[in-house]
Image (cartoon, rainbow, N blue to C red; front, side):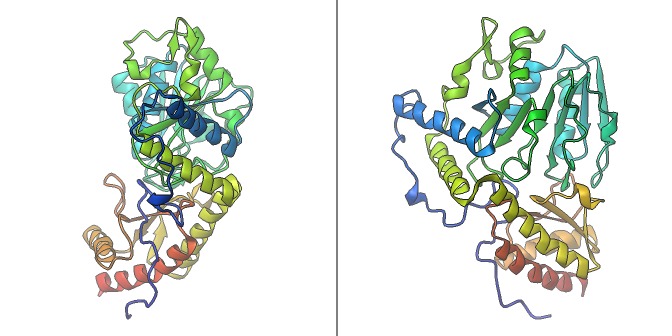
Length: 372
């Protein structure tokens, strides 16, 4: 097979940091806050706008808070777990690298005494019916390193007594999240909207706020994890008065991404772009018997982090990914280091479905080179 004639216009398929939005240009960013204090009136205004526009575009229910916190999605999740968990038993779900990280945190760091751990191998989900609504539950909505997501929120009880803590970093802005069933939701800018790294987003429901104000954890709390003062929520965190110094350049970048998402048509339009990219790969897999989805069932197949296995030895799969990078048609699509050997193609909304369509013939060509 000859090399394909068409190349992806943008070969950025990394699952984090992800591709910039179509038409992105650094020169178009509002950099008026650069060199200014984040505590200045301008700095607080822009940080507050990042919070309020996030809430508006995501369609969060009345009373939900959105805050910018340190250390990306990881910082937001650990902040939530350290601050909220303890007064009830906890169920934690893990079926890929990051969910299993939360399992490890709860077992080995917080050392929770009443902890149920439900795991599944890469490509599968744990049995969601095991989750007890009287207990808190910690889980990732979408497994970035396995391409497996929960199918919906039906397994979460509307009348639950426990809290739901959801790592949604590769689902926010790309999947239809049932906000009324999510008490704590975390994500980061560098995923679905192609923002810059290091900043986390923390979304709290009124039930989560009630827990924060009624429960004091027995373990030491680092300053960057503290969300209450005198037993009351530090509301300032959720209107732009951040715990530590943010990058105002990254804030400008995120506001640009939010404006693009809004102009595109909001979350429904973002989902449509991601699903169009997945459809391209589904059609490819259906006609190429040597390519397979790592996700075992269609209902749990992610349309942001699309993970494939190939009928090649592991070393050949890695060589294939390097070949595509050397050709300049696909950057950073090797499977995550802990996952089975394969390809991980980010299909979040900032990736043009036309670029995914241009990529797949190159995957076929590269497979032919490896299989020869």
